[in-house]
Image 1 (cartoon, rainbow, N blue to C red):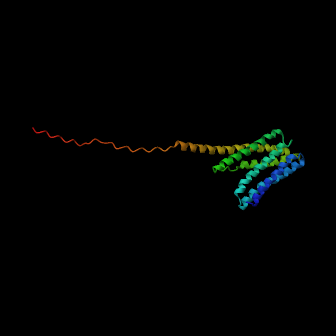
Image 2 (image 1 turned 180 degrees about the vertical axis):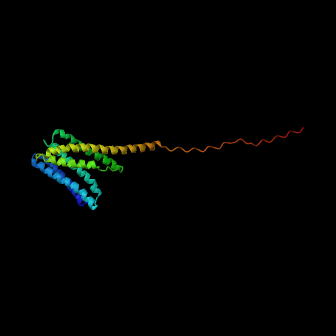
Image 3 (image 1 turned 45 degrees about the vertical axis):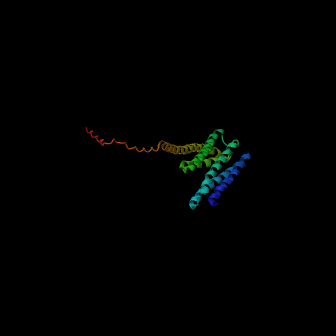
Length: 219
């Protein structure tokens, strides 16, 4: 349980409250510190999975905790840039809102499908989405440093579009499974066992024996 990949994941979770504390400090230094911490957490996200696969120490604890840590990290960074005035243009609240909704949607879908032992594998497009998310949020947190914030805001829109597409793909895959399950359930209801035919009672056939003739009475 307490191997290097899992410790990296736990350290990522420990960094998240420090990033959130930057909300209470309205200065460039707090933004830069939040950006540095966010980049450090993103690096641990890359290396914990790589080390686990290379050393063959993939654990159930790591598989459970890693996606949770990722979602907490992204959600915290979004809360920071939304809560602090002037971090992004109000129109850019749209991709931020899409990203938050998608994370909730996919978490719910994974929980539902896990109950029926069906996985929801990460697609290549979803990995690109994660890369754009991390890069854009890190740049936005460095508000006021060169032009990074403006570039980050553009990348946030790209991440929002990819987020919407991947969220719809996951939702569509889940719907296919649900429809198949409904069809299977309907077939089971329609298919009823036919009752066994009761054996018919043997019909009585009239006797073919002729009744004995009565002897004529003697005169």
